[in-house]
Structure formats: structure tokens, C-alpha cells
Length: 305
Image 1: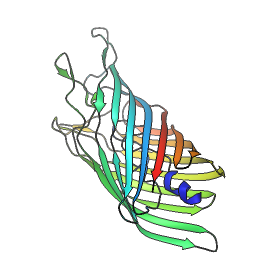
Image 2: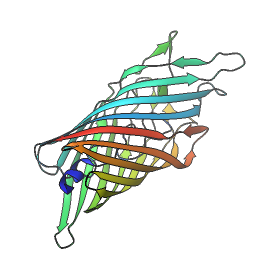
Image 3: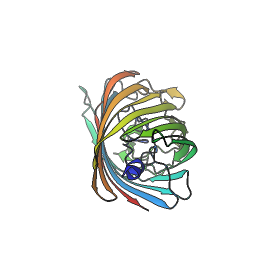
Image 4: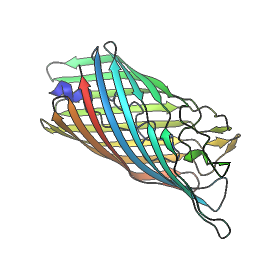
């Protein structure tokens, strides 16, 4: 049972796009969601269907005095495959709906848009480069390096009345966003500990917009209460530079977000798991005028050996 738990329990983020954020790509936590701290076993597939809800607001840089609001719903199929031992390949395909609005002024009515469709696909790899097992204490440690990128598959040219929507209302970024990171995991049943740090380095899209470089981190402790149930408590964070448009910094983007992340996992039957978590921001130092809400995530996962 412990082996199965270590393979599928990692509680999510994230990554690309997940939790409390000041822009649509600068989430907290680890972008390789399902890979988590699971040691790969050659020939193993892991499948998941994630559903995520997040919200954020920010003062508009293009139209000062007006406030942008965004509620984003994401349905994300995820596949993790281990072609050989020590390697996890992770594919994430987000299907996104964005409810975006721009507040009214004395002379201008409120604006709204609800784009829906494919977002930016993410492909990543995690390679476990070191592991140590202590048979006396029944504990295991591992270190992994990770890397990957999101692809500009989501539309970024949606318009209303012939005018292109704000960048954060677009389904995709229009840019490549490579990332790289490190992970350390410690396991001693029923306890598990995971910490990871990831850097993201977006490119400039065809409209001259570039999301800010960001550092994301997560630290999570998990405890298996009884055989089919586990709980977790973590801290996710993100420090992002301001976005730029045609080289000009966008004042109401980027900054620091730190969130508490409680979660639960239930082994429904055999290889089937249900997971849930929320990211609750408790410390922020966002640039300009911004706010971030609680992010909720539910996931159905299946392991096929």
C-alpha cells in the first residue's frame, strides 16, 4: 500500500497554471503536478483529470482607473509515463474557460468576455538522480532535476468588437515558457515530506507581451491516517517579476504570493484515487494594485502498471 501511495499521492498545482497568481501563468507550487515525488517504475502510466477554479483582480495598466477581474475554470487531463526507471514524463492539456470583466467608468460601460477552449499544453520531464534507502529506519530519500516548457497552443488573439482582449483574458500566452527545477523528497511511512524549487522563463509573444520570470516553490508534509486516507499541509509560493508590454513594465503584475495548502487523498478502490486541495494566500507583496483569491482543485487519478 505504501508503494501505491508514494506513486500517486502528490497533491497538486499546479504549474502552470494553478493557484493564487497575479497573472495567468505565474502560479504557486510545482509545475509537474502528477509527477510529484513519485519514484518512476518502468512502464507505469498515471492518468488524472483535474478541475481547478481560481480568481484574481488587478488595476488595468492599459486603462488606469478601471479594474480587471478574472475567474478561471480549468479542466486538465494529465498523463505521466515512466519509460525507464528514474524518469517521469508529464503531459498536461488544459481546457480553459475564462470569465473576464473590465469595470465601468462614468463615461465607459463595463466590458465582459468569456473565451473558452484549449490552453497552453505543458510537457515536462523529471529525472531522479539520487536516492538512498535505509532499511533499519524504513526510510527513503531522493533528489530529482526537472525541466520542461509550455507550448503556445492556446489562442491569444480573441477580440470583442474588433479590439483584442487584454492579454490575461486570452486562453493562451502566445509564448513558450521553459522551466527548470530541483526536488527533494523524504519518505518514512506514514510520513512523507517534499520540497521543490522551480524557475520559469517566458519568451515574448507575437504582440510584444512577456510574462515576468518567476521562481516557484513548494514544501509539503503528508500523513497517512488510515489505509485509504491521507492528509497533507503545505506552503506554496511564487516571486515573479513584472510583465512587460513592448518592453514597458506593467505596474500591476508580478510580486510575491505565499499560500497555505491543506489537502486530502482517498484511495477509492485499487488504483483509483480522489484528491482535493485548496491554496489559501496568507502573505502577499504584489506589485501595484492586485488581489488573489483562494484556488480550489479536485483530481481523479488512476495508475496503470
